Image 1 (cartoon, helix red, strand yellow):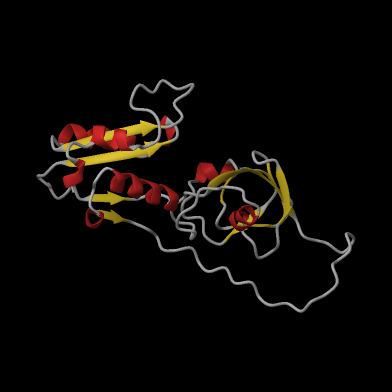
Image 2: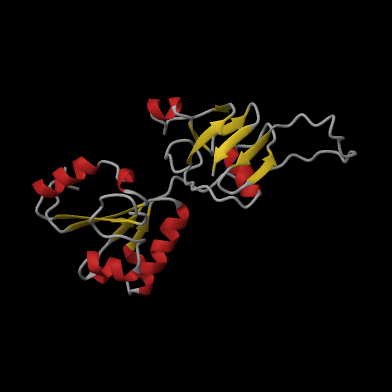
Length: 216
């Protein structure tokens, strides 16, 4: 919008966990200084142990009203993980923003998970099981993971929450730290080189090649 010299007011509202999660921070500051009609409002939900002096907490009806004057009259575009977009839309509706003024961006719905039919057979004995396991350290759970499962799918099957959105390896919402083990990923577009070398993986793409230990 700024590149096309949009003349009307633009409010950019950005919610992150920690200050280091603010992507394009310098570019946003530059654009705000250059364009008098742009207002950047960033809130940090976990400001502890940082020098952040701006707004704190998750987005709320009160903070949205504070950040954007006359928000009920605005056309609003939402982008982010699915649960965040759904929650923000409900907040906007609760403060009187008409539904037709709310637009949501998405990479597409999660692919349907189809499990192939297999004939009934006796449960394998422990000696015949050769499936790796994944330990989710923060959730304190260790579960088996099959060869065709991603780390994200194994987490979801066991009620372990990992942020995700596109499920195609492009958005980076599902980045997690792998503390031990080896995985293969068909797509890793959302990973920087330093993240790859430090053990960060995309949970939606990572399939286990050995026992895993994941920070989730």
